[in-house]
Length: 248
Image 1 (tube, rainbow, N blue to C red):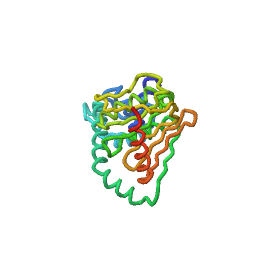
Image 2 (tube, one colour):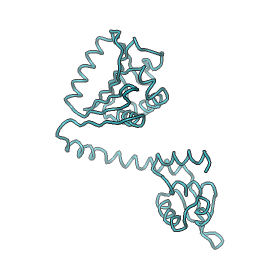
Image 3 (cartoon, rainbow, N blue to C red):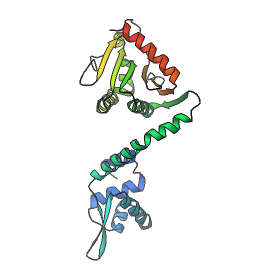
Image 4 (cartoon, rainbow, N blue to C red):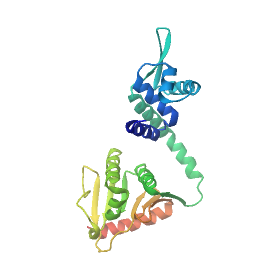
């Protein structure tokens, strides 16, 4: 299997198409119109498994069966259909989300803590911040630590996605640890930045939104934490506002 195919399989896995399903779909794309047996042979799976995959992929709308010259060919649809399927699922989930949140909130009798480790954990925390119901987020950012972990590329992705979902970010940073002039106040990127009046460095990053507080640790400790507590979030928001007034 080529490196390019490996990368495509990894990408498909991120949208939920894994293992033999992904291999069969990629083979159908590569071969063009072909029989189930031909595709199965190309990607190294049994014919019985292949027929099962055809049924599933047909239901998802990513392949079509066509009769031609007395034989049945499998034809892969334009990959754009994958994006449409994702949009449809996202729309359906968005409609259901208020009810799910209501059930989720009703089952909580106290503060809830969610710990995530590693780069993927940090990405999960950042994605959670972007799903805030509030239009404005508050953040106390340790730029030096963030640029080391999770890194500039991941931060740029976060900024782009935040702008896409139209979330304004009010940011407090420490001037003593500024390592670059990037991501300063920007109307275009929906960001307001102030710098703390003290020389003390910020060792961790904190976001406050809705009834939640998200924390990103230093690279050495390597974790992200989300605390769901209306009381704790309110205290952190009050502290943020006090520091905001004192910053410039």
